[in-house]
Length: 390
Image (tube, rainbow, N blue to C red; front, side, top):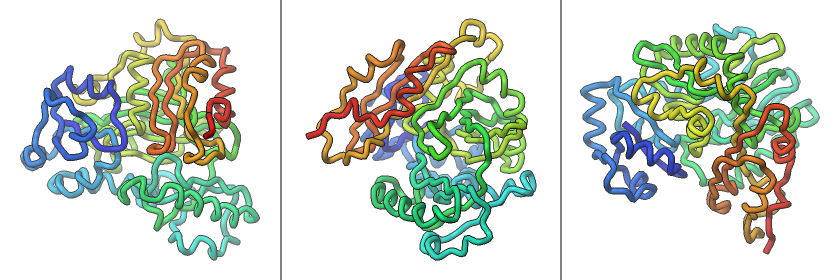
């Protein structure tokens, strides 16, 4: 069963639903995003009754905006409680406290941040909303002297994104302060099967342009990366799944791995893969793994077979966020044709309304290992090259 919600659903996901005749809950939001009446639409009441009879039924959503519907309608299942454990980063840290006993974190009300006594805090640290999305208002604070400036940046972010997402997705009332782990950040698409065992569908390296960069510009995957970390990440996911009693549960998990190879959790996003149908779709472009089918049909990838013809390839998601410093109201257009000329092998381009999404689009590209100049260029780019001002 699938619940579709705003802000975005990809054509690939819609085609997957149609091909497999997956049940789709006919909410107002889903109907506003998908006009195809031939899909296997079911009423909200039927979906609710299904979970009342079978609380372990499979459910996937493309968007965290559906959290409110799930919490209001699937009260007989474990899903609302499990979602809240992961969605609230303070609760998440509490859940894993005995697995990471030395890891520092602290919950603080937003209104108390500016006047907080920071003398006992260990810098550098990460400051972010306890309930957040898409790296919005996530700040790395290097020293106590940067604290006030960090709060100023958060206030600017709050004003910019106010009203864009429901409170279940982004709530700026509470923040979490947590230690900064030196290392590389990775994102994992996976699901926990009926026995609670994790099935890894993709591993992506979240690439940053600098130590202070917290954006979502590039995520890259390769079979080299997957084969390197697969077994270790499966063990890590197993420990989280046991803590939260996860069964039939898809997730998008973000972690950091330090120089010694230790894994530290960043966050778990419930019942979905990467936002805006990004990481879920690139698994198909890269590996011909349909992540939606794999979860709903209880399939697992054969990574040994998949790796055979892709050992020197890298596949990347490029999020074209507006980091130009130019306000959306001053922008007339974005030159997608010029953008595509800067890449040797673009696989798919999704153009988005930048005034609505505050993102120009999503680009999927293939590169050859060792030839990554185009990725490095777009990672550091402010995108002004492609922007036409009014």
